[in-house]
Amino acid sequence: MKYSLNFRLRTLLGQFVLFCALGTLGTLVHYLVLVLGVELGGGPVVSSTLGFIVGALVNYALSYHYIFRSNSSHQHTIMKFFTVAIFGLGFNALVLSSAIYGLRLHYVVGQVLATGIVAIWNFIGNRWWTFREAEYGTSR
Image (cartoon, rainbow, N blue to C red; front, side, top):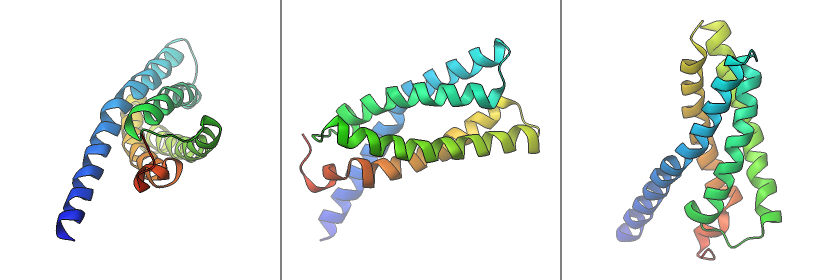
């Protein structure tokens, strides 16, 4: 039992590290759209929202193929993935708005805070709901 729990924790930690490492690509796309949008005169929350959506598309592909190694149909997983992402988008907008307008932080600092919170939410939601079949050995 102890070996099994230790193995599962190491596997979970490894999966979280891979989620964060590969998620960096989606995050970079998100930040690129955010900064470009702000520099072109858009508001930071709207620009972040657009970046979040584009970054989520990148993260879906990486999550499906490499992080959770899903065998489920895209039709099955993409709806769940974007349900989790919509809640993440709400958390992102709430934290970013609070950081910018409440705490008077620079929008990039606020986005870094929001990214940390949303990353944890996304991992939990996608690991235990969207790609749940991976936990039961039915993944590739």
